[in-house]
Length: 178
Image: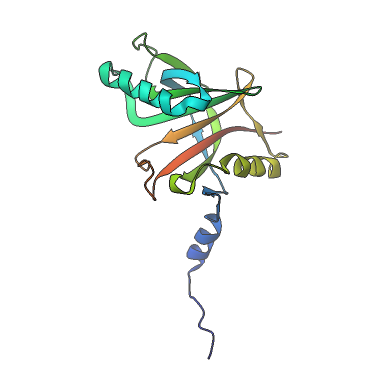
């Protein structure tokens, strides 16, 4: 009995390598640049994100936005000592929104973007991102928001609840160290 090799193109081999999963995360981030973002939504306790989303969706259905840029949504997690503050919402073109909402401004940034397959869990997302940041600390540092570290969860058309193929992007703001 001979061994039958699996024949793959170089592109397929590179793709497999780059998409090596580690706890549901693609461990090689892509880098994206975003201009200033205005996220209109609500802010609350980071341990109660489900409740925040329900509250936001209820208000959104009742009030809505005339200046919404797209159907994509955002969850910004801001870390302050041992506390996590969370802001959920959508991107708007200006601050002209109903007073039921607050607008969080994210500065123009470069982000290391990690794709998370929701069905495989978020459990090790922080570990994988921390490991990548640690391995690249000579080159990249954290970018802060009002002196605090933060991350952005970006939900676009690839997000479909707990569906097996559902993807969320986690954006870690970074800056090159000179």
